[in-house]
Image (cartoon, rainbow, N blue to C red):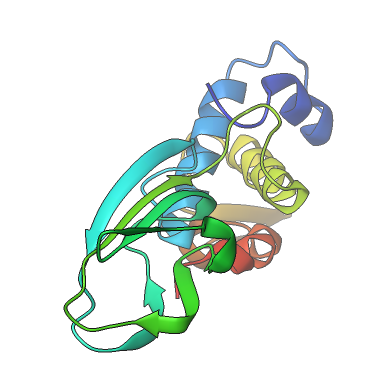
Length: 175
């Protein structure tokens, strides 16, 4: 199941709701978006990580993301209130920092569920990328524009995404 409904993509792209490539376009859009932000996928899943900072750090980069909910934090055997930490899509920060060699166990959620859904910017990026996939046809490698006898082929934006979609996804991109 995709984060954006085929009906929403059909309405956005101006195609029939029975278009045979809607599902494939949405799956491709999600795969391109996930690859561009540096994630394994956009679908929600729970991740458990054990980290040991090699030196004192106030900010730790998360190995998987984008983090959407911090569920449990255990630092050096003590449970910490997740609300006392600052979390970003790919980082976790603590005012007191994380001492070197101390074990940090994290339980967090990455990605989004179809309901209530991802942030509006992610939805718009997926709609743009899905519509782009529909417009390209079965060959996503290049876009060709014809004007009379002149045909110009050009690649899409960064990572195969339309530039507008890449700009919308920038806040969730891995640093």
